Length: 521
Image (spheres, rainbow, N blue to C red):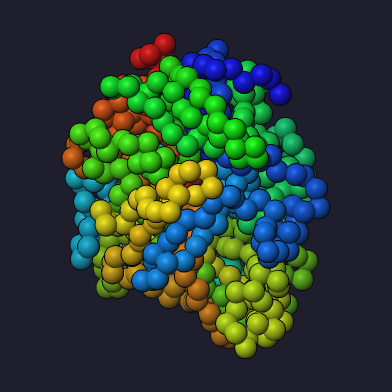
């Protein structure tokens, strides 16, 4: 590892999609870049596919040092993030969607088929389209152009094609949806299916979502974008946490960073700071650093969105996936914009339905209701599952904030308050019904629905906009009151549409890097 200097031109906090893509673009342009990451480099060994090591043991292998205190049901619960270099990409399911044209026009308005224009993005899809192209190329996304009936305009095909052979549950869903007049399509995925990418070819195992990839066929950021940034000279300081941003008047002067093993603190000066710690950690760091002393900061930490997701499981009278092959392959977007007949509620857009694999028996047993744990684990091999993703409405009261006591690094406790809008719940319920129709056609006899309450799709807590009163950062993703501080993670997204947000975060990070290079040099 190179010696860490006391000053860098660009300091980037976080190595997820917002950090890695910005680091790549800046390092490629010859800029001096260091990435501060609280996570560690993932081991590529048998633990990658071990549900006990990753999820079930008392201290999972990559569990972070500090939990989030979450109020989402009226009581405080604690949520522990997994911290790795590459951010959440190492554990994600590799879905790489573009948002649709209409998604940029604002979130759904309650009791209406309109969108809330005052909360729209400060630009439209066409601005981000060329950066989507670049992001797909960098992650070697596999997809089939023209299959998705809601696909936004494209000028380039996907970098690679996915394999057409589907797992048995995916094929059952495909056939059922088609017979119902729907239009299933292959999920665009950042996986090396064809062997044209830099890493090993995918073996179509069923441990992708919520697992690491032992053979590095999943193009997560620690094996794709970040190594390229490092080839251009970017440094990555892992297992270190930014604990304070030091402002002087309208500029960031430096960042205080703590070694999470030794607790030694160093201060790193910077010419420009890019914060990409994620939609929870980014506002938390800003608030803990005293950003509220500046005038245009009232939106920082507020408007937390996380999509309103859920899983519909259908119990079928046959072993669903006897070959145990990758079951996250297809999606259905026929109800993305809601009910075209206008007869079913809610009005306006609903969202998307996707394949999702059945969790391991250990995870099912651990999360099943008391008294049903063994039964649930036994019946897991008879499940076909559908994930529904619906857009949620930004609400000012949903927020990230600081509280006592302080954690082991001297930072205030991360607090999260979140409630879904009634319109959000309506949209998910509507998608549940359609997912059940598909599963019933595929042979399911019984159904179980489970809301997903993670922060894997969280966004919006430092959203960009044209109006200082309704946004935390300007259209260039720079803090309104700070000349040299940018935010490029999911915090910056004003809305999330109804698709996995990773590719949009990546594309926007490339856009912001271009803006900085063109305007700042």
